[in-house]
Image 1 (cartoon, rainbow, N blue to C red):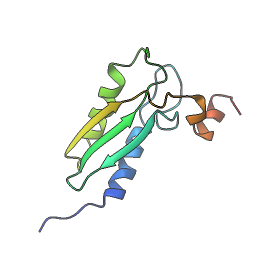
Image 2 (cartoon, rainbow, N blue to C red; image 1 turned 90 degrees about the horizontal axis):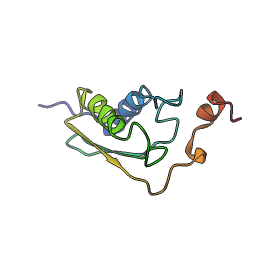
Image 3 (cartoon, one colour; image 1 turned 45 degrees about the vertical axis):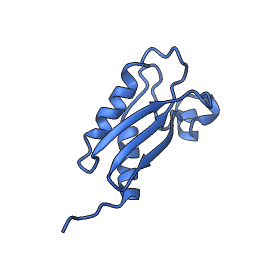
Image 4 (cartoon, rainbow, N blue to C red; image 1 turned 90 degrees about the vertical axis):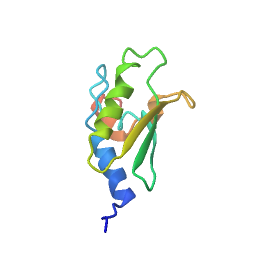
Length: 107
């Protein structure tokens, strides 16, 4: 008998991991910055992250998605992880959480 894992619980673990990844130019994690558009977890525990960057010319455009993918793959319950970058809709400061805006002195 294999133990089943609650995909909602796994989603919460993934969000917790995302909150440990920071944009190197902004002292706020990528989740609170609003760079994560969606997290998909299927019944096979394959994870797909839909995210954006602050700009298409972001200096970490090559490394940040890889860091996200590697950290998600490091979770025991995750079978595979894939990161898809999109610029539709484009990122704006409106996507930032209240916590991020407060941290950056925007409130």
